[in-house]
Length: 390
Image (cartoon, rainbow, N blue to C red; front, top):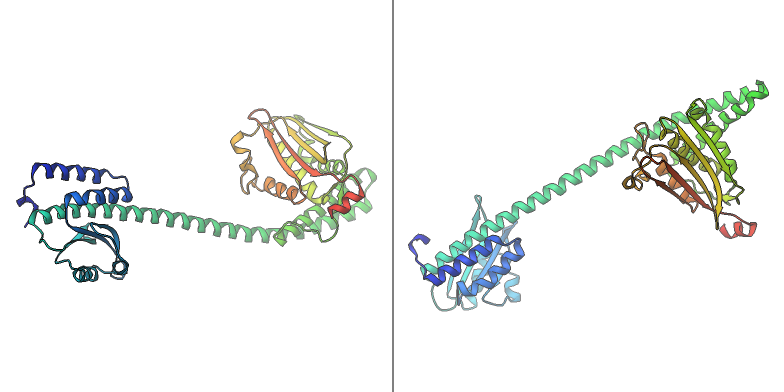
């Protein structure tokens, strides 16, 4: 028997058409089954309806119960056959089971049950139309779930590939760091020999070479240890103006030969601060080199030291290209480069160093108006304060 042989009264046909349209327009599964649960008592009066969705291992998940209250016994029934037997034991004499099929697979079951009256042909035909619509909804949800799982799987796979790429990069970096440390040891050795046999006019330059190479060796040791330095004893005391002068001297080869670059320093007397001079020189050198790179056609580099409240500050300002506002946060993330020739690590490492000493590293900039990077560190104003900090 097919639904084509059945005719509905006009009112019932209008009701069925309205429900079908609402079901077809339901935005999600929850709305679909809420609409269905509300309409079933009118479409199939005196009838208990249960809808099951197939699950692995021949079990079923109950999606809807209409016309009766679910009990603890039926909630534990995991197969459609077992549920039909349970219905029969509860006094239901008429039971009909309709498969929910879609795209060549059985998605679940629609069960109808009555205690006394048998099912009329038009009732079964109407239930068949509902079963077809329910099948389409389950098939749509199934494909949507599969698409979400595929997307999540692709994202996870990409994340794993990124992690592996970072791991390989770290291995290569560690190997390169080891070799660079050996080269720096050679540079220190030869520069120290030259200090003993060179005229006084060359001594400052040779001392700068030795200082830079020694700093490099300490930084390489930190890299190979794979962690930020954690001094075991009292924190060293550093005068930032001295560190600034050293950083200016060490970066002199980058700006001295450029006639279009003007370097200014404004070093006001400031209290000492806690921090390793090698680490702080690294930060300032990073900031100075970045500032010079931001002025490819020339400009002014200004380095200032000053105090504000209980903090000592150093500002490195350039008159270069500037940084867009939306990028000013991300530039402190690893591997986010300001310039094409940059590794994207200098600012992230610099911020980590400053924060390890209880300070901050910030930027103020506008496109075309240059940039100012400011590091702030706690001031040490007395030996008592230093003792408390320890």
